[in-house]
Every structure is written in C-alpha cells, then in structure tokens.
Length: 138
Image (tube, rainbow, N blue to C red; front, side, top):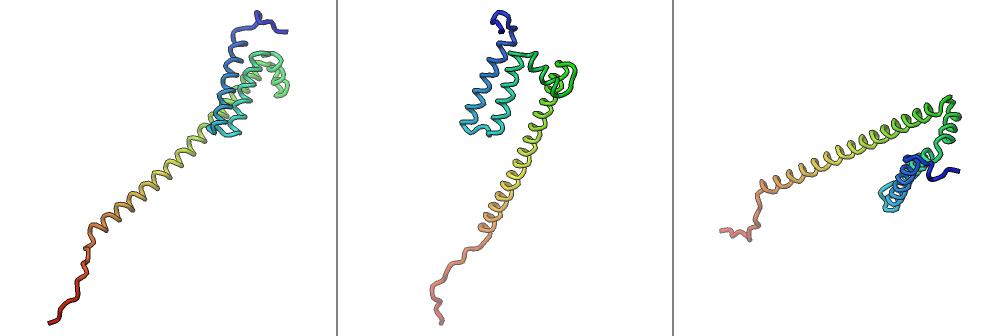
C-alpha cells in the first residue's frame, strides 16, 4: 500500500490536475463544446496520466511488455512521442479543415456582395418610365 508520506510530488499533483481536466472535459461535452469522441479521448488521456503518476512502475512495465520494449522508460517515451504526433496530426487536420471552410465562406460572401453591387448599379442606371395618360390626338 502506498502511504501518503511516501508519495512524490508528481504522484499527488498529477492526479489532481487529471481530475480537474476530466471534470472540465465532461462539462464541455455537456455544454456541447466537445464531441463524444473528443471527450472519450481526453478522458482516457487524463486517466492514463493519473495512473502513470499513482502507480508508475506497474503501468510502465505493462506498456513495455505489450509493445515489446525491454525498458519501461523507453516504452513510456515511445508512447508519449507517438501521442504527441497523433495530437499534432489531429490539430493540423482541424486547422486545414477550418481554412477550407473559411475560404469557402469568404468566396460566398464576395460573390453575394458582387451580386448585390451589380443589382444596385443596374437599378441606378435604369431610366424609370412614367406612364403617360392618354395622349390626345389632334
């Protein structure tokens, strides 16, 4: 059993931070600011960080044995770098999608504005025709 006096600073600080971010992520999901998939990914991430802080050796040894590494430190570093690359890929994909949406929106606005200006110009240049009353012949 792990005694409170024997815990390192990171072993009590990381779970507190993890619980805070899990709570924040769930609240954001409930307010519809996050998707279900994003919430699950972030909750799993923070649970794994919390577990790694509380029981670092058993978790890191299990990761090393699953991935076939001889050293648990190497396994943790490898998984950490892989997760970072995964997050960078996800963020770059999201940014690219937003750039495409913004480009499409700007094009649509420009086309709408051009059509509006063309309509105003055609109305200004047209000569209003007055209907004459019956012309007298005579």
